[in-house]
Length: 611
Image (cartoon, rainbow, N blue to C red; front, top):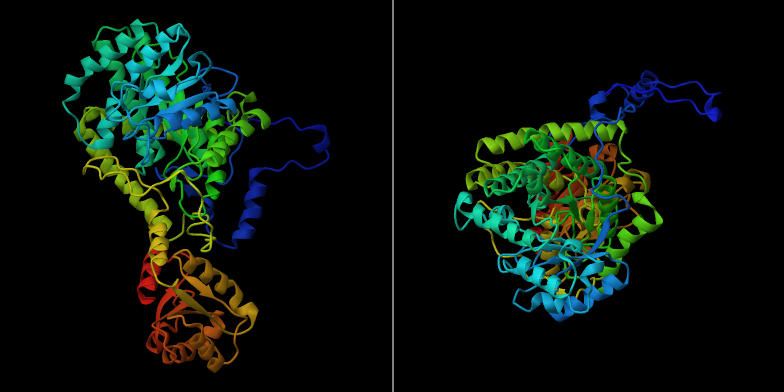
């Protein structure tokens, strides 16, 4: 995109105008001969993120469906309908503008959800006027009759269906992706799907009636472009099904809603939501339809939620809501910060609700439509995501589209590749998780929940898009450490002056505590005998030597021999192997702990030696 010259404000007129060449000169000095490419990041799709962008000409605008801010949705997922009603009433009384009705076994249930029977919706919505709220439904395998039941409930309330703000949530393709199976081929299911939409529309409801749920891909570990491509393909299948049933295309397009995940990668989330609007507009144009603003429901991402130090989830959710709103989401629901631990209590729900209200009412995030337009980095990223997503979308369509199990299986294989690479990045802490792999608090107080999440959701079929959280590997290590009769310990063998060992001692403490080990530190030793005696008194079975490269060259091997003689079962050294590695290993050093090492493998081993 071309550079756009900016007018120089009067207060800056006395300063020389800087250009990119000057900036590059300063950067080169800091790099000290290093390659500029070190500053270029890459997304999971391989899209380059440059360190600096010029202002860009705004492309097609990505406006929300309706101006005036997004709808603040509260998750309604308590298995007991009466309790769900009580929580919903409190949410609506305290600022929520709608409810996200999450049924068990749905993509967003995460171990809980409303239990379906004929009276569920009457109980859950008792005392709630449907005229004044937004309702977003997320259906599970047992709640197939819920859309029609909700329609009856609204009609019996006396509300004109055309005035109801309801998304009914039909999503057979999402169910297919989530389970890896289908009761019949899509061409056999599509007529009944279209008939249900026609029946609901015949009552006067405006919809959307179905949803293309890209969040399923995100939950499974997919990339942004994969999420967009799946969403487009599912929506297109729904469009074709209704056209084949006799509905004209513009009307059919208006029946489709979209659901996407919003995570703590601020710029990628903004670009992704903007890209979805542009991509679907391209599909509409190719179908001979005049593009119209689509309705997007955003939910904060499951995969970024952590069980350890869950308060950090509040920060993650805040960034995610900001990004989704800036990207043009029409409705947003926030996973309460304790969602990965169990069913959230009133405090967690209030914080989830207020995260949105503060950004909407106090920070005034919604006052500007598409505020990222013209920002070079966001425009570039939006365009690159559109190109990559369109490429994957076309590949899906060649295989029959998202409504075909074979195409879904192929996409799932691609998702697995992205997920595995992310897990490797997390294991090496290239992608740090605050409170989990970085700055862990091994003495944290457990957060309260209404009901604990006792077990993971049921196992999925081989080809299913199984949800995964980024922090699971580290949390598993922490859980394992918690099963020991006494918390496993690691002695920090700090040797030499504090300036020599302090940085590496802090690094080692951070690393080993991420696995649940308690690190025993000290002010450092100048005598090897004193170091070995302190280790023996610590009752630890493993030890990490911490000092400078210069001291390692002189004393690491001697320290290791003394520590081994004092009973150390495993000796680590904080730092990379160097020219003295052979002698150090011969003396007893078993593994090196350094930035970029496989922390999961190292911690797994450390726990094994601590038994």
